[in-house]
Amino acid sequence: MISKNLEDYVRAMTLPSWHQWISYETKRLDRDALASLIIDCIEHSIDIWEKQGVFSRSQAARERRHYADAGRLVIDEVNHAMLLSNDDERKAAIESLGKNLEKLGA
Image 1 (tube, one colour):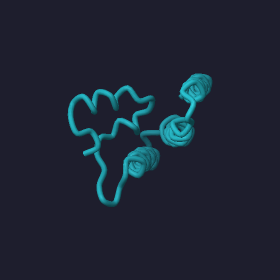
Image 2 (cartoon, rainbow, N blue to C red; image 1 turned 120 degrees about the vertical axis):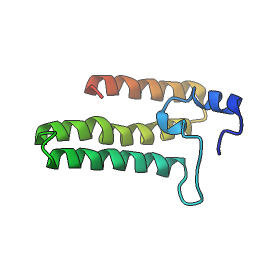
Image 3 (tube, rainbow, N blue to C red; image 1 turned 90 degrees about the vertical axis):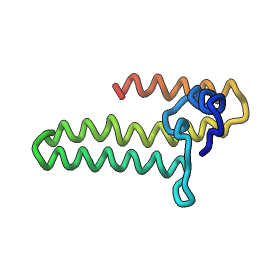
Image 4 (cartoon, rainbow, N blue to C red; image 1 turned 90 degrees about the horizontal axis):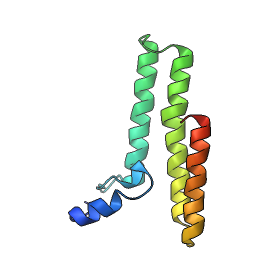
């Protein structure tokens, strides 16, 4: 468990991205690996839905962009921003990411 108590968990929930809210790790999977696995599962589900005819090819592509591609981008960009030592630069990087995602409709 990453969050040892409720206060730690509530504090973690104020972080800017869902992948930072994951409150556990295993010996083989850290938080980022778990987030990547979640996105891989979503992408696999989209592939299955496309094969079964639930999504058309264009719908599946849109879903992949919206959930898988945007999810990976968010993880990478937020992780990069969190490495910035200057609080204002970190905040600006995360706000810029949010604005770019809004423009993309993600």
